[in-house]
Structures are given as structure tokens and as C-alpha cells.
Image (tube, rainbow, N blue to C red; front, side, top):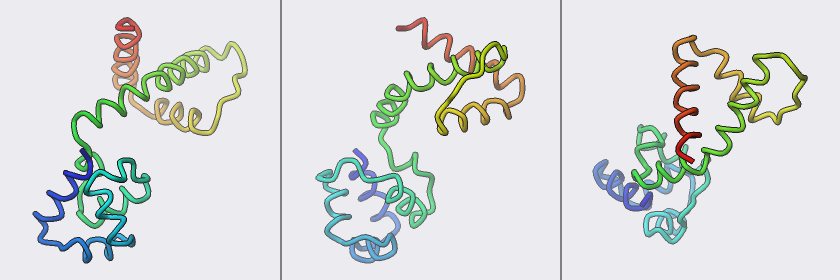
Length: 130
């Protein structure tokens, strides 16, 4: 769990709970709740601060199971976005998309042709698995 990883990393950095909480900008009690998995879903803002203090990417705070949960939870959104992307490539209809989808589509459009093909193949595989 995320709390277990935070404790392990904090201790490996030789930081006390109170010093770590102070550097992150949260209370010691709140950090303790995160570390003890009482607060199981800290905000992305808090995770960003923790990763900044630890000088690691956020992904290192997550367990493999949590990474899989996030990936699977996002699968429907990714499929919808790819569908919108493919429709926008054909310029058949003017499609209204939310800001997050537009941002994702713009990121896809900036990928090289090879990387776009990889994304499309991966999404195709995910769609077949359903």
C-alpha cells in the first residue's frame, strides 16, 4: 500500500515523521494517517509534495497493485479518448470534448507516428480483452 511505501522511503532517507510532514507542508497526524493506511487516498497534490520531498517520481510511491488499479480504472476513459481521437483524425464531425480529453488527444497528436501506432495497437488489444 502507498502508506507502507512512504514509511519505507522516509526511513531510508533518515527522516523523522515530524520533519517529513513539515517539509511536505502537512501535519504529522495527517502523514501518520497516510503511512498507517488510515487515509488511503491522499490527493495528487499531497502525493506530488511527498514525491518532491523524497526526490522520486510519484509512481515509486504506489504499489504494483495500486498501479494496476489506476490503469484498469482508466481503461474506459482511454478507450473513449482513443475513439474521439480516431474520429477527430477523420474530421467527419465536429466533436465537443471536455478539457481533459482534448489535452490527452493533443498529447497523442504530438507523438511520433510510430508511438501513435503503438498506442492504437495497445488500446486495440485492450478492447479485444473485454
